[in-house]
Image (cartoon, rainbow, N blue to C red; front, side, top):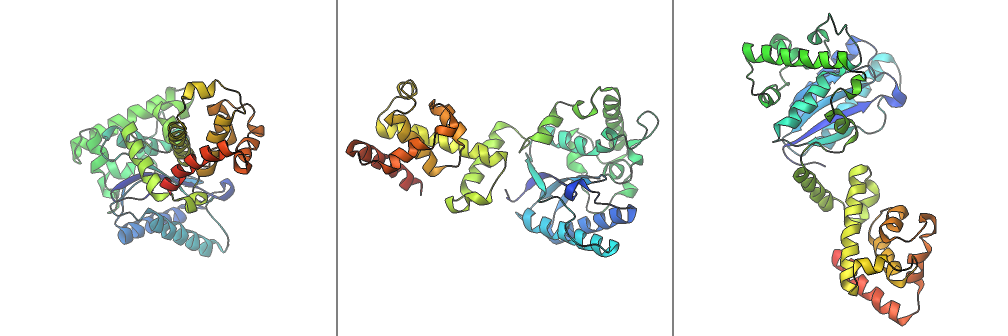
Length: 334
C-alpha cells in the first residue's frame, strides 16, 4: 500500500532465519546502503535497529515509492554481502513486511519507535542492570541521545515531538530517562516480549492507528485490487478486505431478492435462497468456504461447494430469474 507521506514499520528476516550480518563491517555496509536509498528516494528514517538475523525501520516515504526503494535497497545490500563473503543466492526471507503507521497520531510514533529501540533490551544484548541502551551501536537510539553519532538521514524530531520534547540537551536527557524506565520494565517483566500490550499489535497487526485509519487503508486496497490482480495479493489485510466485500455482497443480494436476513438464516442449510447468496459471494470474492458456511449457516465447509454449483448449473426458471438479479450486482461491480 503505497501513498505519498506514508509511514511504515518495515522489517525483514534472513532466509531460513540465518544471520544477515556476519560482522560489524556488514552492519556498516547495510547502513551505508540505507543512507543511499534515502538519498535516491527522499525517504526519512525515524528509527532503526539491526539485530542478528533481522532489522526494523520506522520509515517515511514522502513519495509513493516504497516498493521500488525496497527492491533497490535489499537487492543492493544482498549483492554487496554476497560479493564480500563470496556467496550467492537469497539473503532475505522472502519479501519484507511493511505495516502502515498513522502519520498524525503521535501515540503510534512513540509505540513503534520504542518497540524498535528496545529490541536489544528484549534480546538481552547488554546487561540491563548495569549497561546503557545507547551503548548498543546498531540502533538509532544512540543517535537520539548522542547527536554526534547521528547519520544525516536519521530524523528525530517526530519521535521526540511525540513526547513533546525538543532536539536539545534537555529533550535528549528526558528521552534518555524515559527509555531507561522502559528498559527497567523489560527487566522486571516475566515475559519481556509482552512487557507492553501495544507490542502485540505491532508484531501481529497489519496496521498501526485508529479505526478511521483502517478504513482509509481498506479504501486504498479497494482501489488497488482489481479482480484480475486479486491473486497477486495476500495477507491478513486482504483477508479482511475480502470478508468486508463478501458482507457487502450478501446485503446487496438480500436486497435484490427481496429477502430478510433472519428468515434466510433460519432456513435449511441447502435452501435456494442460501445457495443463491453463496453463489454470489463465491463469484466475486475469495473468502473461504468456512466463512460462507458460517455466515449463512450452511453446515460443514467441506460440503459447501455443491451449493453454488447447483445454482451455476440450474435449469429451473425461477432460480434462473433470481440468479439474473444477482448477476446485475456483479456487472455493476465490474
